[in-house]
Amino acid sequence: MLFLSHIFFDVNLSRDKKLFIEVKKLFVTEDSKPENYKRTHCSLEFNPYDVMPGHSYFLGKNIDKKLEYQVIPLLKEYIKDGVLNENALVEIMKLTVSQSDKD
Image (cartoon, rainbow, N blue to C red):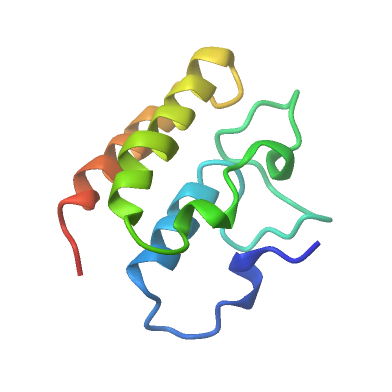
């Protein structure tokens, strides 16, 4: 399975791609690959690649609305359900703040 983060070669990434990478980093380290990953905030009970939001949340128009109404609520629910540890909330709040800091 090909993950969007594995095809980023451009140093000047779009804001949408940067957001995808920031969300991915809640689950695994940025340099992780599906076959050999290092967890960050993801519980040992879950395979991070099975539960992390997919790249389709970060495609198309209205990325800010998707982030605010779909991705962030999903991530907060993951904390309540024990998929992500509580330390992830700090990083999730940074996503909320950076939402208003558009490139």
